Length: 247
Image: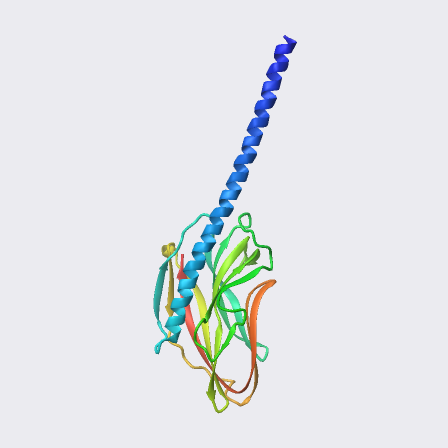
């Protein structure tokens, strides 16, 4: 009787161990699958953002920089889209003049693998001010863990504009400033729509010859990319508002 009970207890213990190991294995497999799926999602969105950046460059380089661009997005359970307001800031002589949003795709902290502070420029440059060029006016950058607009991501990929400076001669400079403005639309859950508006020149406060210190910064917390330049002369600003509709 004692021996039979002992054998039953041993079998129960062995079954418990097997079930526990099975659960642990299931959890590990689920986590690894989630991370792999999140990594695939990031790669897909990188391709999408690269295409959008190229199209926006073309739109801004055209004689009439305006138009509407639409893109189907990759819907996944391992990441979300957002437009983070004030992701970028343009300052002139220490005063913020314009702020731009950044289009974000981020994966939850449990699925991200990049540490806080990680920055990898996938398209564009770490220098956010382009001088006498009109190409590559948009960056696509992969960041590590961070909190953006109240959302914590294990890692995220961002699309945002750079600033172009053109030398016009006789001490005159032109600043082309693309500005992304997010507009949430619940009925656009599978689309990203970019409405590029026509630029309107602005030269108030900058039409007197003097030294202007231009700084442009994008990012959050310890994940910052920036650029700066000093201009001696007069400045005309061409803000280009690009309204981003997303769901």
